[in-house]
Image (cartoon, rainbow, N blue to C red; front, side, top):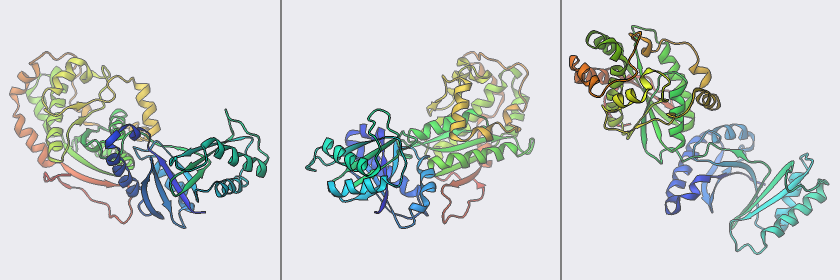
Length: 406
């Protein structure tokens, strides 16, 4: 029997008339993520997506499962067997496949995607269950079965499978537009970026570093984090912005308590420029209220007022334990906790303000040539490209950003 993977997309069922467009985006991303594997075709079929595998597909199941489990937009998926939409053939095929398994109990759940199939769903379940029981001797348990057999009957096909694999859920990548995520190398910002990816946003990344004043460690950490996050969205662009010279100018011209707020205001301006020229509609940060001095409500207001783009803060009400748990689940925690030399620790005053008053930051910035500092940082930004999976693609080296669209 030919092998297939049945993908159920969960949230997309709520999209009404727009569902075909969302489904087509998900089909494209599934096709892309399975590049290089033996996949014959990926197509939407009556409320689900069917991935038909070639002769080598069964042997590649572990890799297929790994890639699909990371892709936003997928509710769950199952390795399935294809059979003709005939009850006798379905029941015989399920019973034959079940004999190669061990189970303490089982149940059968059937779904008719095409209600023109003449046999009611309960009758399908009873007949398939009867033949499985005759072949295996397993008892039926409808509440807590050891093995849950699912049968799906479509218009011209039928499938059955024995296990569901969980997906990321959410919306397919690219369906919600593009954002620019500020990524520091810590625990919070990769999680914030991932949360926007799960909502269908494709994220570019900007990292502010202080090389050569400090080492390259923070850049190396961020590269590793972006590589990991690219597994969820298939391609990423990372902007590496030298920020040490900007910080030195701030130290000369700004009173110590306001320096952190001014650093962050400059970062927002630079990130906005990079976002706009690369097609981004919003900025994303890992801010959580009260976690550090720059993340008090007063300071967040002062920092955010310099950009016309919306600033999305998906972690704003999370506590550190929640964020850490999510970082562990998405695979970024181990890298994030490695020691580094982040630019935020450079020239940081001993007592930064936690309550910037309205207009106070603007007054402090009068000693700086803000436009020149932003222009210099954007001009010196280096951009790197990341892809997943890396099939038939040569790695893209760093290059100076020239302002082209991403």
